Length: 188
Ligand code: IMP
Ligand code: MG
Image (cartoon, rainbow, N blue to C red; front, top):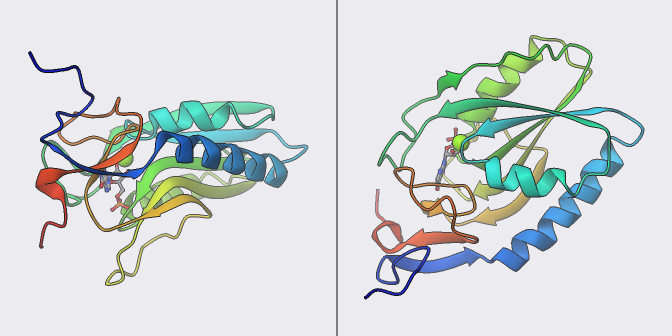
């Protein structure tokens, strides 16, 4: 019988960010955000589904009065490992005018998701608008459409899973950020 494992050992290539590193960085980001919005009410706008684990941990490190809203956007449907374009699945419903809005997502690659988000929310006349991601993919060949204001970690240009990030909706419950064997250094 196979031992219980978040990822079958023969499918895991390596861990790129450990659970301890993530927890430490979340505390630092929380402190930073609390400083940026001190004395203000903050509105977090999270991008589901990938950001949900990061979101849950991060917001508990931010000792401020806070509102929480979510949208759902998918750009890597099913087994895609390159962006297929931004698709809104659950649109923005909150009225964000006059609010201090911080968009929280799991990872930025091309920047299309954050660009779509900042375009939409920017039109609602928020008092301020910033973006925060746990991961930023290093792509020297790429001019990103949006550079996030706050970043947890830079990761290599490989498809990563875990801590909310999925491949075909699998591996979101993995406590660390990992590369799968089949995606390790895949040539494009
Ligand atoms: P962008 O729009 O190209 O910046 O891609 C960002 C979105 O694509 C994120 O919100 C993720 O959901 C998804 N994504 C990008 N890279 C990865 C990855 O390596 N693993 C899992 N999801 C990814
Ligand atoms: Mg996403």
